[in-house]
Length: 136
Image (cartoon, rainbow, N blue to C red; front, side, top):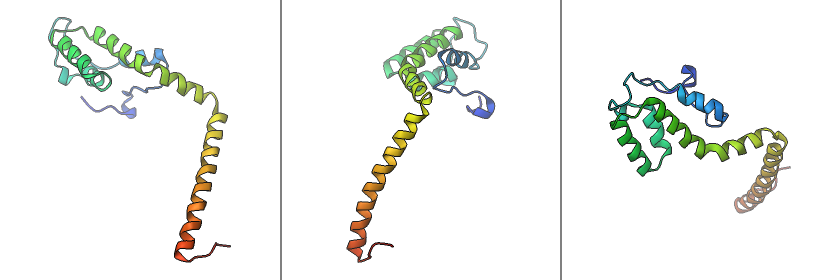
């Protein structure tokens, strides 16, 4: 298979809605192996994504399920549940931030002010150390 790319429209945006996340996962291309037929986990995008999110013991369990012939629909359902469970709080936080751009601006402004204060103090010490006066 080819790599995932936005231009191929085969990415899974992590902060999309739960419904859109399910659709994205269900669109993952799989081969035509029937339920009950062993599947090669190392040749499966579903398994590769699973292993990026799941702890080792869960990855081992899913590997075994692939070798035992898990149905693609069931594998995708479990993948959705895994990813959705891990991203639900982050997605909610993302949506909250995106719905309040003023808050983001305030945080950026505050950070810029602190950075300016700290850098000006450091710059003053550096100028003094190298014998350069303040720039006027």
